[in-house]
Length: 376
Ligand code: GMT
Image (cartoon, rainbow, N blue to C red; front, side):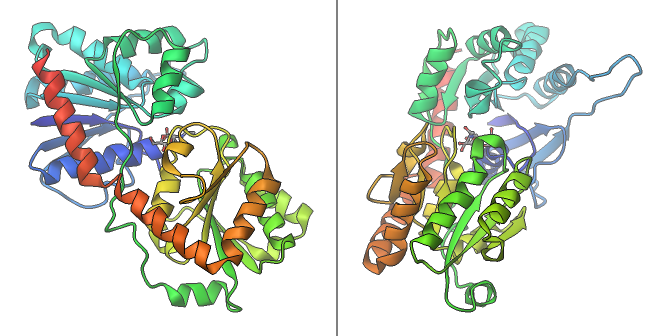
């Protein structure tokens, strides 16, 4: 099939999922086109079966805000016309689903065999999409898609709760490359960071408010107070980094916390981690948790959104009420102090990750494309 994939190029998870899906589909012999305003971070190697199309925004004195959705629709129109796309799969509803609708309208009969598939990822529904400034357009655009998927049961329900969706939403979860995300020997790195054999606790995110990074620091403080000698690795960067640093200073634990910034090879950090913390205030899936689990790292998380569909309480880690840092600290301590429990959870985490194996899920998308196309 000729498949167009539209995504945000950033380190955010929807762009990662979209790019990895493109690679997985290309590995199965499909011809892929990725559309975005810059090259996605995960599209890191040259391949003949994946073409990147940059959406160029011409500036013009009149435009305070250049209309990206129109420029994107224009690229879509050209691709459908000249590359004979079978499927145009947009990740993140805003504005991608709207641009896809517009492109299909512009082309009329020429686009009648192209299946427009929208995958909902999270904040396009839970935060920004339901904002009154966008809601009606998002509602309309989702309903105009030929197929709609969501990354978790939770997100599917939230979409039905927040929007007036007439379409059947198919849950297709996020997936993981088990070969890339597996524990590898990085002892030299561990020794450099923890010369006294301290435990390593890790958090990975884009440090947006919704990630509650100060809760990570407070949970870590609880762990230290419970008598565990540990270091905290904070991977990523974003708007709340300052708040996190302030929290370290307030709790006087800065010497035990390392801010590593954005890391490409996050699996290397996970390979030396004993525990992963994800106390998010909203998380439709929690790909970062799945990446940790795939490396055999138990997860302590909040029990909101799609996280319970990934992290199983008492098996792959523990879940606590939102903001309950005492609970997260207590459970973390339990895992870190009990070697047998840690080993059991580590094994269960990897086993659970295997249920989200990349090829399995790519095949589900492939079948879904066929199903939607056959109904056009
Ligand atoms: O979490 C983020 O800040 C990025 C965001 C995105 O839209 O890229 O991630 C969302 O989609 C991911 C991939 O499907 C999910 O794993 C994340 O849980 C989800 N984030 C939120 O719901 C906050």
